[in-house]
View (cartoon, each protein chain N blue to C red):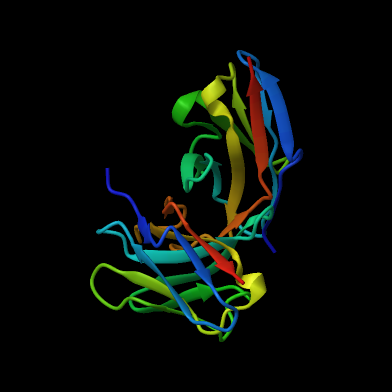
Length: 115
Length: 115
């Protein structure tokens, strides 16, 4: 069964460093998403991406974040200058683009720790 | 604005007992509703979803949920709990009703199952 994959599974970085989180969405899906889950808190939407541009973003997704589809398979989230509060589990998801209510399929997540 | 409230951050049941996890939503548009399950150190897996067809939705692993518009609820049930059901459960509503819209999650309910 097709699945969303994410690398790395864990990343530790120093405050102020740039990090890139990578995702490979399901191959025939056209919508891609990033969510995050700070330890002990709810899963929060960051951004959705369709047709090589941002479709929707939350207030969390400020100028320090960016997303890119650098090739035909990868989808990345870049955090330019990490802060302590960026420590969280980051989930990538993808869905088909048929209509509202499609299932979003989630990857296993990347746990980011900012020291 | 769309929101989800999950009553009870922790629910404990005995093996074989009824499972009831509560979810109430607020939505300014006809909602699409989802239940996801998260096992330790794994991503989010779809249990079931409501997309305006039948109000009683059946999902995987014997779970079902009933959409009640008058009560703005989408509670998750399972007649007989199994040890393998121990996990965290998230209810979610779509922010809009177009393709690719964000999921707004509740805080989650941890289900414990004792023998």
